[in-house]
Length: 321
Length: 250
Image (cartoon, rainbow over all chains, first blue to last red; front, side, top):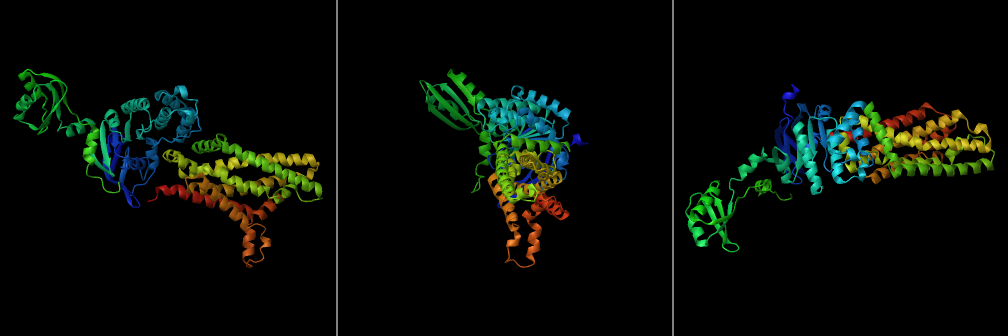
């Protein structure tokens, strides 16, 4: 029956430290095969939740199950099924890559023979074959991150938990690590945390937005964007006299606000805010073609997760945070 | 078992991947060398009927080595892993808390004993120099090494405990040194403490490390001493385990 259970089931999870609540009544589920992003600012409770799921910290109250096993009562079963990369990717810097992965595989209960095969496989998968004999401390951060990912994968876990997997990397390294995570998502359930919005947009199918230990929003990445981009403003650059522009758009239905600014030459920038989430682009095009004006740009601003995040957390900041 | 051995191997290997391991070995060699010179001076000057191993303990070099090296050997056990974060990576694999504690202890013990191996060469060299076969009596040497092992196990358990309490290696080392030197001083030449009440004298005698070592170095391994060191070691390993376990307390 094990496979029928969702990969992660969290119910009313709370973690309190003296004078501070890190996680406040969190509930969510992650299905098998999903790639879910935990998004939130620093101190939102992402790492604490992950540590509880990885059986490193106890929760104050609530329950958490991984692959049907309770993290408090059956921690060994849970640990066998997860590959966890803690924050800042701690590694034994004095060890060589292959040696380290072999050591970790053995700790995770793999037999000598199986650990050898698995280490070969993850070295290949994470693009580490060229550096397997190098000392980890002498590798670049990007390679170290791959070693951390390889470690999380080496025992073929059902669930991979990655705490801020791309933090501190340069853009090239970030790209490489992200594409690796995307690839992992095809065969594993992945829960990753980040405070970078674009990372979630690029790698995750679903997002949980965390703020001050609570879930503010949980949805499929694109649904969340769509839901919050309803008030999408339309911007058009049109070569037309200002008065004619205002005349043409003033009395049209569905427009809440209009703004015209002057640009180079004959061009004017027209910004329209819809009243009920309507898409104003066809309307603009209709007016432009009717008047025979020249249109050089027509865009509808699409809210990124970043905007959504700011929108959701606005006004919720309590003093002291 | 294989997980335990994997951990022990890693613990031992770490000493040879850092400067610390070689530094400790060099320091012990140096101090053993001094004690050899000291010994030769004594043996040459006087007719002594005590075994050479006993003289060795009277020079106090032995205590200098144990008191100084045990903090350096044990400080990294937990503290270093906590400060680099690898502790979290370790404790989220399916290894048991006892496995971790015992592997750390075994690793420190293994390295400690390794640093003492050159002493055999010192004793052997002494025998060659003096030509006195009686100075190098195998049962006495064995008893001496049993003594070294027992004292070491107690000090290593102090160190593991201290290291489990903090994420700073320096603090761990200082705590271990304090525990070690505290116990050593309480029982140091207890006869000299005439001001103590009558009941305190037998207690001090019982926990006097120097007394114990004198016995060991004469070839006397008594049950009382063995029980003292083993129970002390078990007690501090138990405390270490409680500390490791405490992260799961609410």
